[in-house]
Image 1: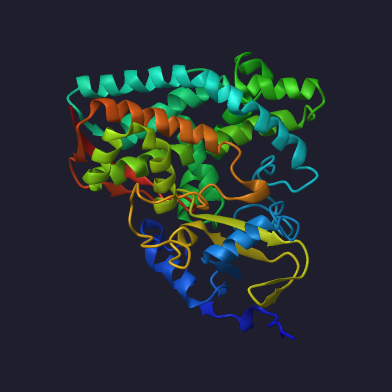
Image 2 (image 1 turned 30 degrees about the horizontal axis):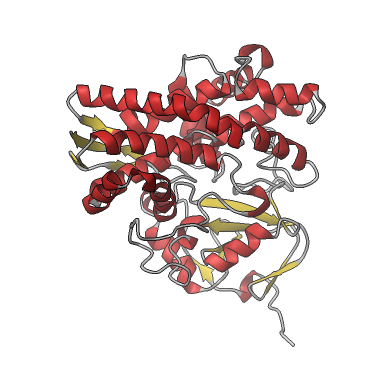
Length: 402
């Protein structure tokens, strides 16, 4: 019989603050310390448990009955704290409240939709790359490619007006900073909290959405009573919260990966059909979404430790995607690898519902680049950005040569 240990004192404690500025700029030391110390550790700075082991993270993500998201996917525990906004639907909802909005989003973002959009998005990507090359080919890839493309095609598909697209990034920065503590990053983003929240709420209103877009389809689902009219704007808001920033930073990371691995760029140019695999490898390698929290629904065992009810667990996706127990040579970016099974989009019931949309955005942009750009290389040192949840670039100067 196995005897379970039963409190925070029974697991190793890590005296590192994951939200300290030095760890937000480069999380490598923190992620490695958590993953290699033990399957489960306690972080005294925030009184939460944390894991960076692939199998343990996967176990939590797969067990939605005992490890839930309804208390928030960030550090705040909605069992004891008031959320800064109404919880996201379905991202921060457990069954049964989760199920109907999830079914609606799965239908709206399904394979038929992607087939319909592919030709248009490929033409948009071709046009963007041609315009960049016509300007001489020296770009800030963060602004001119990684942000520019998703900020054009995705809001168009949702049915948003063309103005204030950059403010969608400011809102996303606020959302992902709010998943961490009330530190300086959150306060910086929250300076525009009232303005951005009001603007996003107005964007999600039925009358402000193009009748042909994803947003209008979500509202139509409320007409069919698949979801309620109260849920509809929250589901549209979830699209805007989760559907832009992670894609932007995923594309930025794959451009950085190819700029620093020219041999892999040559392989993609020779075989553009590898674009989708390349994007998944970049998501594994860089894990733009670094952290997500789940909360115990009841007393439960995890990694041989008995956790009490309503305890927060910090799942370090970036550490799990580099766990040498799961990945051979995990720090290497390579198109030789089959990255399927990575946790960059989560897994299980709450796996990212828009992951195939993100993949197609990256795929068409990479295809446009591979057809036109012979060399893709750094033009100057890039500058890292900081966010409580995401791994981001602030600038990414690249030189594109035809």
